[in-house]
Length: 388
Ligand code: RM4
Ligand code: MN
Image 1 (cartoon, protein in one colour):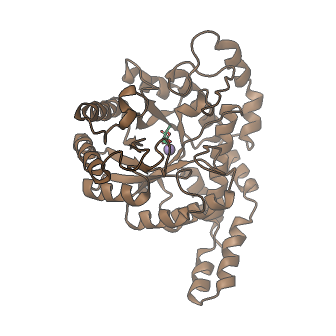
Image 2 (tube, protein in one colour; image 1 turned 90 degrees about the vertical axis):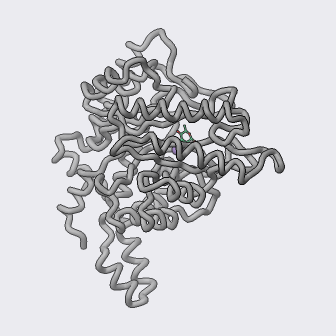
Image 3 (cartoon, protein in one colour; image 1 turned 180 degrees about the vertical axis):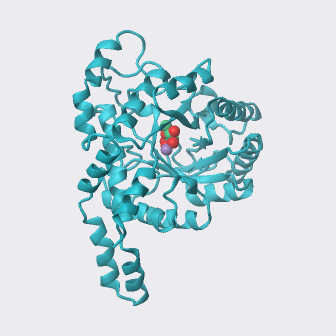
């Protein structure tokens, strides 16, 4: 069996990044449900993210989304985060919410629109320089709705050109993470629809370009852990956007819909020795809490990732390898399932105690009074919402 001290120290070193947009109001295209106490500024989103870190101890960075988190002074925003005990993480570009992007951004047939999109990507790297962020995360809504609408290969050429210009602008130690998504908002073609397309572009760009796997961005039934294994083998798994889904890009809490899938994914990560922050895989959440309170939902999500990770760390790899080598199909599967079926909650509670945290982060947050305080304090202003 794996050594429990090693399991605990791996869990203690594991880092999970929070998305600033998870703290604002969200909904579906049918309705955004406003919640009281929601942040009105990027600073207040950071304050809320800092609560998640305070109670879990493993979520010290918060990803920003530009222009949703645009501020005049990024050095001041960075200092604000530091004062709250967190740091600004990945910078997410947004080239999907401007009227100019009706036919796409970096793959738009109009060179003026492409130049505008690339200028935004450059601006995001300027922001990274100011915040000390390491990763630029790109997700493009680009695609077409109707056969014949645009030239599929032509769009790939334009995309490649924009990515190359952006990649060249990266500073030392900075990376470009290219996310893919099967469909939506485009319904016929999407310009970066899958990991293969993303990987082809990353390989052409260079070593500092890597693929992001958003767990909600695949067709139903796709074996995501296989993709993860392939990207790890190629050295191009830049990170995850964790969330869960029943149907499409549902953005529900990670581990809610299919905790076994999350375990299988993390098993591949652990097997490849890629859990440690030094391996360069970013473990990010990308979720929306449309009907549930946001801060405890983020705490719960962090805990769900930790539980799946703990189970993955508990796989008896020596026994698994022996069974695999011996062709013992049932034995190998039993080793795998033993780890998954272990109740890791006591182990994590004990670890939290050792880290000076409450063993039950959700209950501790509920008792803290923070939820009531933000409802009382955050009166007036415009609550952060999808698109602001
Ligand atoms: C996209 C994608 C990106 C996220 C936006 C909000 O579907 O998942 O990662 O930045 O949504
Ligand atoms: Mn995502």
